[in-house]
Length: 223
Image 1 (tube, rainbow, N blue to C red):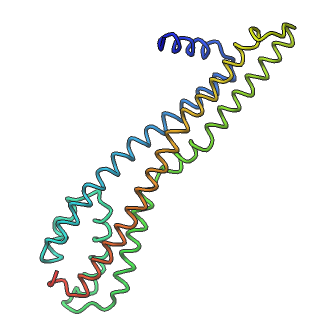
Image 2 (tube, rainbow, N blue to C red; image 1 turned 180 degrees about the horizontal axis):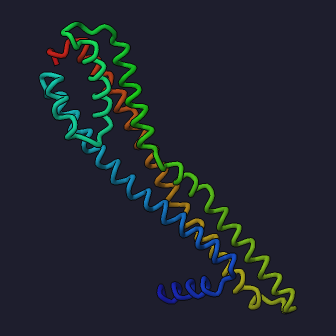
């Protein structure tokens, strides 16, 4: 039964008009691009989440900030590493000659800049998922409307006003709507899921920055 339905769909695609085929090709390209983004972004977020947990545990166990800085690169691509690196670099500039911290606010600004840059990096290519989810249903609908117009035009030319005469054309037209939804639904689900994950990372970076600043105010040797 499933193979029969699949064969019927393939036949409808092969028998569809040039406009419908062009629409299906465009939707296929959107779908392939969105799935490539989904898989790569899912893998990147998974690695970042795992490494962030390891980095936090290491940071809390370390006795000195120098020890954290020496091994921080091992925990990339965690965004917390960049937050720490920016804050630690500003701390080193202020205490380079063995002096005291001159401005804790400057270190805080450095961590905020790092968090903003990391979120921007992690959000890269997500707008393409939003574009796919927003536009592909309408592209599919365009193909459907065009196909129905073509079907009724052919019906009027033939002069045979029967369901049997118009059904194949309408079936071909509706394929593009289904293809548009097939491309859009995964993109929308992934975009919402990734957006939620990035909000979590934003909160984690803010929390880590606050913890890092608390460590500096207590004194880095009291870490």
